[in-house]
Length: 162
Image 1 (cartoon, rainbow, N blue to C red):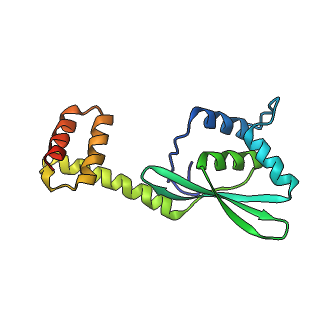
Image 2 (cartoon, rainbow, N blue to C red):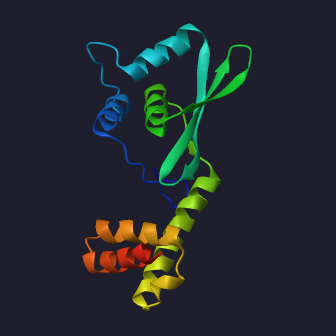
Image 3 (tube, rainbow, N blue to C red):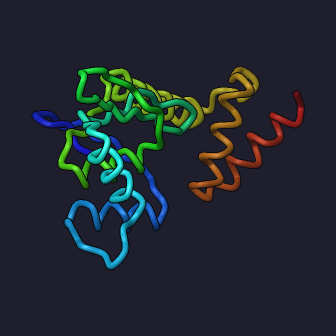
């Protein structure tokens, strides 16, 4: 997802079936039987409940959180907690705005800065003993993902000492 009028982006990883549902919704493809998001759209329409927009309101521990913002014909507004992939698919299906809270962009940016800082600390040979265990665990995961097994072994050795 890209910020309108800006350069910031959110990368939201979804499963294969969710990605397929999003593609079907965004391309307005007609299926032989109603898919879940079409089914939800029909329920909302039949009960005169409108989807105002969806908002991705939080990012925590690598997980995004979203609300579908619904309004009934009396003007009552409800925020319904849902998976961002489901909310995005429904918004695409119903041509509604997909929003993200400023805090989400700031959290993503801070996580990126933290990762860069941790990598810089390691590159400058700062002692691992001075880094908090929670940060070491994150660094270990990153090292394994990057297949930097020498670094992963050093981090694991430090964690084993504690």
